[in-house]
Amino acid sequence: MKDLFEYLYSLRNQGSSYGIERMELLLQKIGREVLTFPVIHVAGTNGKGSTCAMLDSIYRANGYKVGLFSSPHLVDLGERVRVNGEILSHNKLLDHIQVLKPLAEEIDKEFPGMHPSFFEMMTAVAFCEFSAEKVDLVVLETGLGGRLDSTNVVHPEISVITTISLDHSHILGDTIEQIAYEKAGIIKKGCPVLTGWLPGTANETVRKFAQKNKAQFYTLASCPEERELPKTNLIGQHQRRNAALAVKVTEMLKDKFPLDPEKSTQALFQVELEGRWQVIQKEPMIVLDACHNQEGAKALVRQLGNLPSNKELIIWFGALGKERAQEILPELANFANQIRLFQPNQPRACSFDEMQAILAPIFEGNVHSGGFSCVQSYIEELKLNQILLITGSIYLLGEVLEIVKKSKKRLGSSFQDLL
Image 1: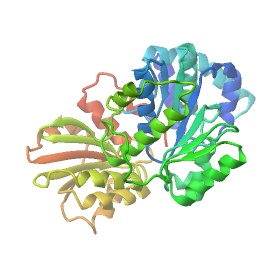
Image 2: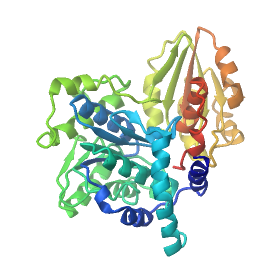
Image 3: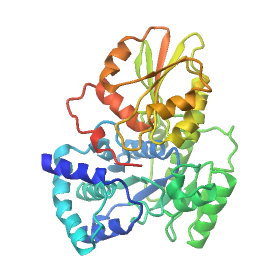
Image 4: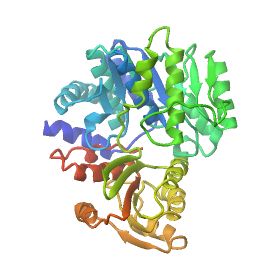
């Protein structure tokens, strides 16, 4: 068992390599017949995780056996692969890796340098698990981009693109149109595509891609902001937009996957998704909210405006990459009384010095450096008139949540992949 986890860890250490060729080779080794299930394929800069969780909740509430593949995980690696809400056990994960490892090594011998990456291996694990469990439907979230993402080997029932904004520009392109083109790469010939509230130029890029592939194009971008959006237990107007997307998907697939509207409405109030405005303690209030780019920061700011004005806001923040910290910290500084900076245990983590340099000219409050070994003591120091917001990289949330949960399993954050 330990050797197999070390093998996975070694793949993670090699980083991520953008491209689909390795996944195609791995799928040939496994056998394409493993892809026996219908798929809803979801891409987007923000909102894809929430939309996938909502779809999973709706279809499970209606009696379907649903596979869900998402990333990254917060605490346990098995969170990425779920069947009917149950995370993949370590034993099952290792059973799959035991089968896949020699296949991956064969590929590397036949095509030197083409050993599948960590994310590709986890994608293959998901496919094998969903096939073995004979699921009725799979909700499949892309990792990075779409066109060259390892999940993009499926022929889905429908492709969904939630949002488009500038992120991962060093890989996906430095314009909205280039990023939209990469996300649109999940569109397949003859399969309908649905987009959310995309910027006009991004939506037009996706529409042209769909037209070229003879795929029917649908969008919610033309729907006015004030329209009656579905309600959900996830907090924020952006989550109601995600709910509208999920509901529209189910309407488009209703002939193949009929639903009870009442069960579907109830399911939107039973969505399980950690790290999205998740209140883990009420007094004093502690909130976890993943926020990894400027679009996410703007959604978070709308929530911060609803907090009680008579309480101090303490923010714990960490990011992957200086550019992300530059996008987010100025948005948050206007609301914070104190900021504690953390450096997630990830190779691309933004350093304390870089974050402090960003804050120096814009924030007059107290700025502290944080250590994960002191998390419990920091929390114990909170006062009733304070609110703690832990935000930024989902990797930071995962490391803090693991400590808060006092989990005995220390496998989670070590195996995060680089996105």
